[in-house]
Image (cartoon, rainbow, N blue to C red; front, side, top):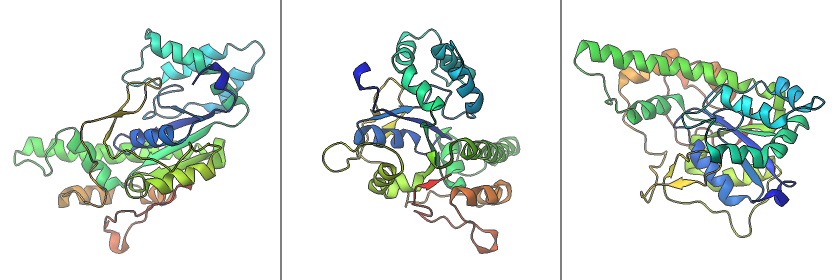
Length: 284
């Protein structure tokens, strides 16, 4: 993708928590559409709160505005772990694409993709990724740490997604939610929905998806990264969730917020995990 190809680009900014399928979604977009510029880190890390796009648009549209500096300032204000102001490749990427990124903000064409996952399996997945056991330890201190972490993750989920949902005030139908369960169970449907919702051009041939596990890419300038594992664990295989963890999630998660994201709570207040509980890509 070069300078001559900038005009048809659709600029897409990603947001979403860890372990919600954002890397897999980025790979799907880049594999299937030839005019997408997907931003994980430029304009701020995808796992952080969103930039103030209204003020950013004013900074980008002012007379004599230094658009490159404004975009870099927004990026460094909410950096990811690998974002470095002194990194040459990151600076070169920003320099190459700041004009279409700035234009997408000032002319109201920037798109947003928000990934989300059922909170029960999300908390379990994050704790497993951080090498915590599936159940609280017998040691009282370690058990207290286990319970405390589960509670903090639920509160973090509530705060982060409440903030990201406010993007609809700025973006309206240009911001959509893509559930983790949809990516795992119906990736081709996700591709079709994105093609309908955004001005994205499908590459020739049928939609494609790699069966390999998608790993985090170091930055926006890098292509999708894949592990040597041949297959992803399918979302329909519910992990073993300890009853105490399920109780914490039921108690701490803001279920009104989850309903706005497309999930529902079962009668009686107990969450019964269903693969594909919300398969449709939907506007925020």
